[in-house]
Length: 122
Image (tube, rainbow, N blue to C red; front, side):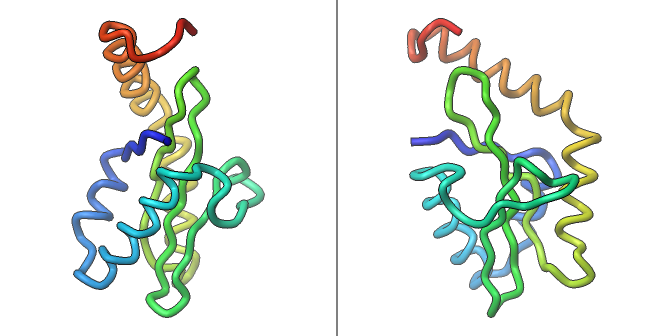
């Protein structure tokens, strides 16, 4: 089982979804939480290391990546439509500009889990 985290912008993406879109995303997140990077298709280029889970009918993509820090964490990078590759441009920007923020959140989770004896030493 993987821990799912959002960055501030991907959380906003999720919050702005409509009902049917949230249903797809929630189902996708459940798959990602269960199977991690085995879900979806690998991305390439500047998004190498990320996967996408897509719904062609809705035109939605979930872009996500695994953070390797001794516990299994999947970061949701972006949720949105593929039109003009917008979701991929957003994902690339977020990965490069918010790396420090995500690392701080991961460190906080690791420390909380360590404090409560929920993880092995790293």
